[in-house]
Image (cartoon, rainbow, N blue to C red; front, top):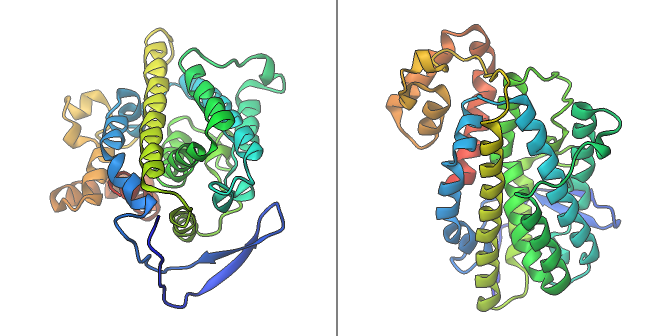
Length: 322
């Protein structure tokens, strides 16, 4: 069982969830974590899966801004079926003692946001145009199986998806918006917009704190870690499917338009890619910091977005390196 925490008095603000309960949101308080806390065990136990997911070709291309609009649409459809399954099972098990403390439907649920995105991309009859792909179906099946037979493992699926969406997902939003020339008003990107969360940092602290307080033995924690790694595997299978489909789609590849970003400018050298340089900045490499700054400062739009871009990259790195 997780060690009991002793915390300093915190500045808090109250938010109300769909069940009318007041949720206390901790602001800027450093958690007093134990190595036995579930959040710490998950971070350590899924580190290799993080690295493998990050290095999938589809993800690397996405981060470079090389996105096919059709693939982005199909990826959005895949997420819709995953989140539909997950949130149906969460609702079914919302009173389960080992899940109820991390039940945050107003703040986290993504199904309706994804439906709005699909309507934007496919039109009003989008439901007749999208189906669950063969690469996505095993993921959906596993979530439904867990919900029926072993609900505590929903903790793994919820943590893997939602915490990723609140961290690295925010940089993907910026890349997609620029590369696909999506409206600044947010159409097509509602999935990435968590309107019920005012402070991402504070909410993630709250979520991890609630998760660490779940009553479970070491064996259950180990099963949750294994299930989280399985969730990463399912996500990578979806990425692989999209990558293969992309090879047969005849469509101009759009990119984010940053200098040094095309194959001709990069000369096959990933070190010249501003997204790669940004990641190295977040990891503390000062040489790449200079390189990234020069790239962005020479670009008119880069001068405008440098501050917000750096914040987004820091969030991505924090998720992958936690």
